[in-house]
Length: 392
Ligand SMILES: O=C(O)CCC(=O)C(=O)O
Ligand SMILES: [Fe+2]
Image (tube, rainbow, N blue to C red):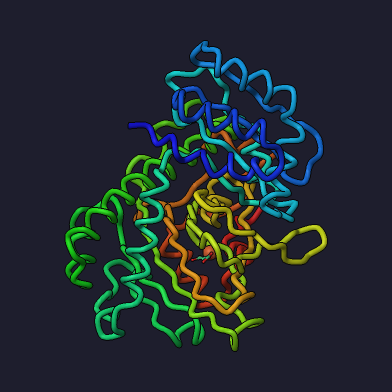
């Protein structure tokens, strides 16, 4: 059944600002899970943008919702931003249209492209991954990360970079378990037996992996389409994804210290379920060259463009520099789904991104070449890409 509850928290945000609209939103989602409202809106913007409202079913309730939302969308979405105290100029909210087959609604490709070119990150809501599944997965991650160190050490490397990162490796606060390949039932089973995961938790992990795989592929396809690739639907088929479950053992003494240092993701695209409550994620705001906080926003995913996507897009996309700081003394847990390029396939920009005015920026390289380069040069941001620039 369609996860209509996925959108409810946003109605809750609206409740704080404007009860009549919130009530109508609630009514809408309770009565009609199928029609969706699709909006791309820069959060700091007071302009309306090209919010689109579509109706799938003609009913009295829906009609009310559409009329009210159309009339007041400006205040609503400013309200949404303020209610969540999203301070950042970097953060776009994109509503995924999870029921596109019922809808004529256009996806805001231009907004997606702009977010990924300018900032390399955005938040996605209405994404189709059930809220309950997200919270169950968070509980499973927490329970696995609370296992004794000897058990967590069993999570050894399957492919490069997929081992447990123990406390003390990066710093004394951060640790991370890794499921090496969400596409591979064998890799799943390996992880389950490494950590002796119980059947209930296995089921949650399998379901969550399937759901996030679908979502990350969908986003990647939409991103490709937003860059003008005619039909991105098969472009990323079979591209590998791993999952990292991160725990930050923040406590009152660690406030002000670093949870994870500044980096860009060395992969293609990251779907991050950040902590619902404990903040600390920050992205670099390129213009003033400072960090801006990415406030928690329950039931959404934060998407980050990785360095491999920068090379693949021939420099059209930007990867977001980000870090996690301890801003409060409570344990923080996040789950990242990292989509990468296939192991032995060189990352190369499609022909469509190359022309006399935009010659190939990078020499072909594999994801492992890049991971090794980052490690050898001890460079964990996109600056490492400068070593792979093609000579003009
Ligand atoms: O925990 C977070 O919110 C961010 C984690 C992260 O940046 C990473 O795992 O690459
Ligand atoms: Fe990251």
